Length: 222
Image (cartoon, rainbow, N blue to C red; front, top):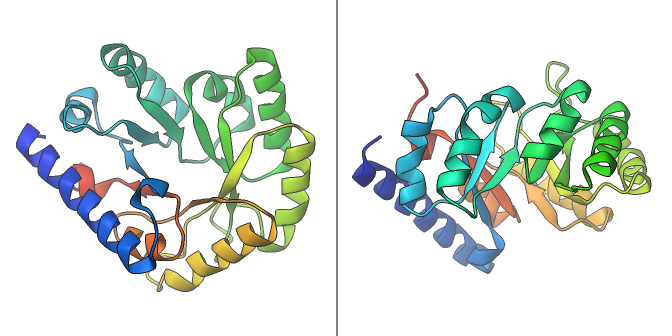
């Protein structure tokens, strides 16, 4: 990706976030843009870093391990979020590498993360992933089980920042974002990780604190 291209894409997404925040009467600095760099190599990511982006998201621990230590060494102050599913046996590696983990969706993972955090004395922020559309093929905790999973996570001393969801593809996202915001409010949580390239503006108007944008920043994946 060329430097000018990266700067233009980043500016366009930032402008869209500002516009949506204004519509909703929200402060733009309450919204964190996570540039989802999964499947993109260091050379593709560097122009976006040069354009000023500092928060990035990856789907897989192993892929992130292959490129981010060097990128972070070159540019201090980068924040890394795990936005994909996490296997319990990768909890230690995830805790060592990421500043936030967005896919906490089951008891076994809560246990593994708590153990890994205690061992590393490092506590990345956690978002509980909710299967907001009740889709059997998707990860995430069922809506009805959110209070119980949250209680487990709090009892295990996980720093729960909020809730995360991926609405069903091809359907209007707004009702699902509104439901996630309602669930978070009922549980006293402020963080809402919701919204991707196709619907992040809608997510911002409905209270998103973290939007996970890949294609709009990097173009279509190879």
